Length: 288
Image (cartoon, rainbow, N blue to C red; front, side, top):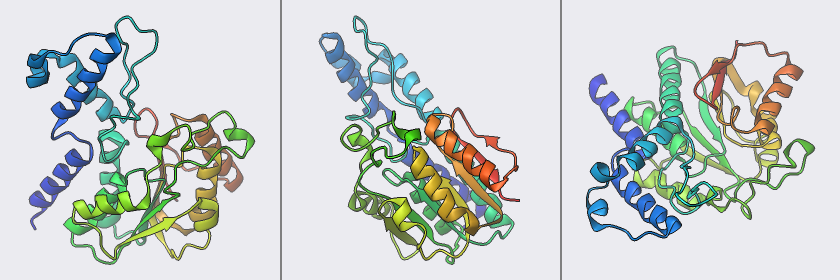
């Protein structure tokens, strides 16, 4: 496959993972929910041509998808923001276009500079970012690197340390975050990317990552949300990150417990490598 065709495939893959190909269907669903919230009847003309008649909905979806943010906006006559993420989250990844493009650039650097090692994401939700990583290796004909998919596959753990006490994101409170392994495997299969270069590590990070049969890592992508999950992943994996490898953090700006874990770990290890800001929440640094 030529480089141009490879890049075209990877761009289409990103568009699919972010639901940029059929945004009107998601826009129609949000329109229906907004009508229900406001107690107004739905108009057939709007459902038939949502992009023309409700450009505000489509523009909002495009903006939050670009930023990797939540679909929140005011509802006429309602005190609370419209927050449909438990019932209408239709992307295969929540990281947004900016963080997905950053991941693409990291993989380019790893491949072009022959930085050795596998790649891992800790906290994968539906698996979209790891699907992209496997798609990247497939598109470039890379057959000697594994994509490690680490998750409880039962949601975020209940808070058990002081830093997390005010951030209960467990399945009981945030069921949209609890995606089982079978659904993630099915997503890989849907993209024809489920093979022996994809390996799953199910369970809590403190139990699975220290003994994981991983030798070297070229990229670690942390998306564990909380202090304990983030610190456990760093503590178990950072020493396996090779020189020049990438450490990417998804929730640094969005969740204070995650930020605290990063700051504490860097201070304990004496890590002074500068952190790059990816977007409103994501950061990254390269191991010297």
